[in-house]
Image 1: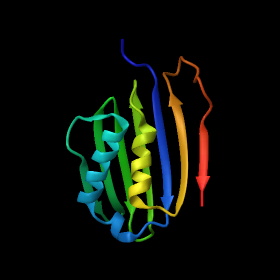
Image 2: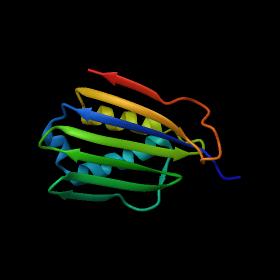
Image 3: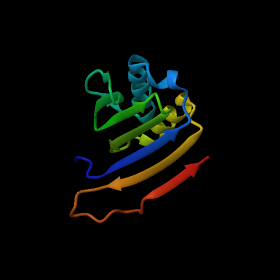
Image 4: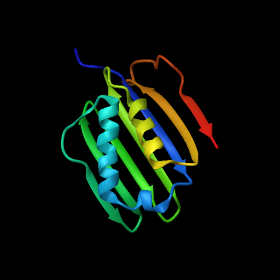
Length: 129
């Protein structure tokens, strides 16, 4: 039977050294480490692109994804990890938060399910300064 629900965790990170956010290859490796920690299996190598609006990393996984959008000039990063089944996306998000050494962290978690199913738990929010 296929999993019919998904855990989706997000982080808004600030106060990060610009050098940690400007290296697309290093952020791609970070997405792989996050996927591994979450118990996700990559479907392909991460897509890593640096452009005029920062660095974007997307890692499609079997049963989920890892995404990172970094803005080196401002020290800001947005990250999210989603997973179905027994994977643990919070573990992946924790790896991203720790390795980027963010001073400011705001997280959010959502239990996602098809529109016909009621969510089993309300969203959770945490903030650290």
